Length: 213
Image: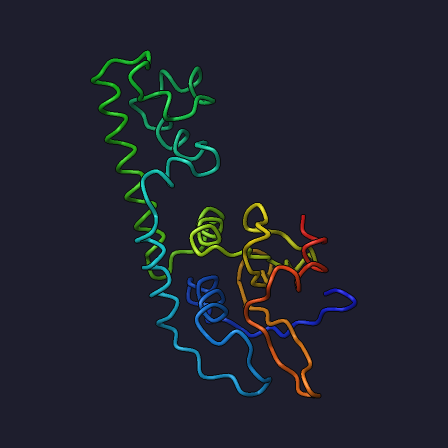
């Protein structure tokens, strides 16, 4: 994938949780393992990871997804808010429900209730067995776990799950045509033995980081 860095790809379980299987295998095992000496992967790790992330997912984090765009669109797309959609779709959701808002207390109360419903739906999806990993879930996982999640696509492009953070270690994941995720292990040679790294320090991943889109 680069001239000086080689990776080993291991197939993740394809049950709808493949991203979480890939991530769980990289972050819940040893940071380095000798090739051929993998311990058996326990599929329950992915579900435990999903449950952990769902517990960490707060209402504030839902509201702030994609600079508040997600929550605003979800709210104003509801039939009862159809009349105010056009003039307010570009307004952060917090300005719609704060004390200075143009709307009545009755409308703001209805908005708050809808926001809570949407949040609970997103939280449930994040923790649900078999729910496909959407972009917001991957970005949130990177933030919550303090990781740089770098994804190598079948189009041979590196992308990052969020803005890169120099203080955070790096994990590598392969995405095949937006249909499946597999963990990638960075190969290193120590005393003529081949080792596979699950988590890579920032400084050791610079060759890949330079290629991230």
